[in-house]
Length: 355
Image (cartoon, rainbow, N blue to C red):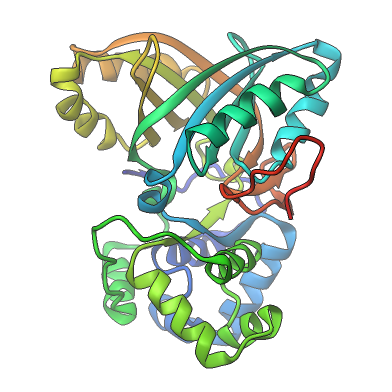
């Protein structure tokens, strides 16, 4: 995945703040001493700046199941049409459901676009047919099951560090890549640890142990295993409006099955592409991109047509508002406001609340 140019930002973050945020995209749990060493700052200065950024909700570190873990479950995209008077309430209700990863309100074509994940297909059926369809104001649904996650937003980066700084940070953190096999199922304690890290992905093991009522050694061992097996993904998120790429565009496309892998490899190398999935339905590829402006949508389509002539773009949508992203409910400027950890294992009867 690509990078975003650091220019024309709101005054909310200066260049040093952006550099710290970029560093945490590369190594979300790196010590402040390590980050400071790379940036030429003291650990105290880095920690103070990050505290200010995080408290404002402008950038934050969270944790979710990794793309590899999510691939072992049931992912879907649900397009929801609503009574106009109920649209906002429906979007917020969906955002507060732990089975949704993201919730967006679109300008046309569909009212609300939801990325949901459940433990299996029967659970997805209950979520869509029994829960979402029964929300007051919902008038129509369309569901596409994700058959494969080809690229995820975990790899999207700001462009605030030099190449030398990026290389130094990677050498200092020296993180061992997780194994490439599918992570095994998570038990209740694994999930509790994951949900605690969703609120703050930088929580020290001591704080995690206190929160979970467990020993420091047990939590350290469990966290190390989740990282080693590739079950957990730490992400440094940033409010979209300050990235210089404030517009989200969704593209639904068709590509011959025999050419899908090659086409998707080309799409995944485009710098503005954040999410790329293969799906069921009339279209078999869904792409999400962050762009400089609404006008850039046509530029993106032109680039796709030039580089992937086999691909037919069937529809595109502009996101008016991202209500939820990766387990966090956002305000109108994309700043975090409320954590709703992603919980695919939550599958309770209608009118019940997942814990």
